[in-house]
Image 1 (tube, rainbow, N blue to C red):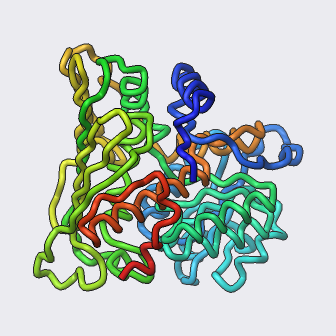
Image 2: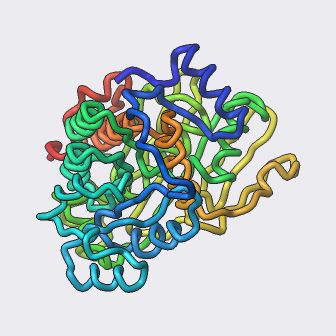
Length: 387
């Protein structure tokens, strides 16, 4: 896949978007959906959540009670008890509650415009493709897929359907991280020389699919480390040219028989900037994103959580003294407006594919102990077949 920020045109468009406060369109649009059918005054776009796990229950459903342009209109779950609970709690009509066998009937439900896939990573591709075939726009939770081939298939299916595909990169809609993009890419403190990011927690097996390689595609890199990857890329505004990496040793918990307990990696950018990143399921990390530049530094700590984000700079200029918002509500409303106005999402499937390629490069570097070029990341062996 080509570097999405190397062309002058792409960079100018990205900076124009940043200057408008939009936070960073890192990829050009693909085939966009045809204009949405006429909406009655005050009608919100209907969102169906596919998978009613912790993220849907704790974050997305509450966020959909605060959105201006969309609303919870359906659910997909394998648990009849959960379906009944959501009908009672959120007023979801029984006719808009599906299981995984009846999911395809969603094509006949005009109340649902957007499908949000919130399933274990390895299931993303199947349900994005099925949603596309049902004629729905889609948000897919990160990471977009567990293989490059799956990510490419998802994009192709959405293009064929003429619908929009967005990745659940909520921090592109969050003020502190938007400020990191702006400060880094406008070189407000001069050229960035070094980036650092960490993100991790002590895994307690409350979501066992995360350490099941078949379902997750990998360990903390796929879950928590992708925030570090994203943070460095959108702060720098470039894609790295190479990566080195190493796995963290097993911790003795017995959880990490199929996936890594932790991983550290270093990315090198074309201008020599280095980014050092760490992620773990065996260590509680602060969740930090820091940039050291020619005339100062700026950082967020914590940087990646659902709330409580805070930042500071070497100049005490207050540029990171910003409000915390409901990130998921902002993300959902932005995508609804993209659909309504027939404009590209700033976090498209192409960005998700790029990141799947980079994750594959990091795993390959850790497995071989060698420097891996990311210029041809799409040619790497998929993580699912790596070992």
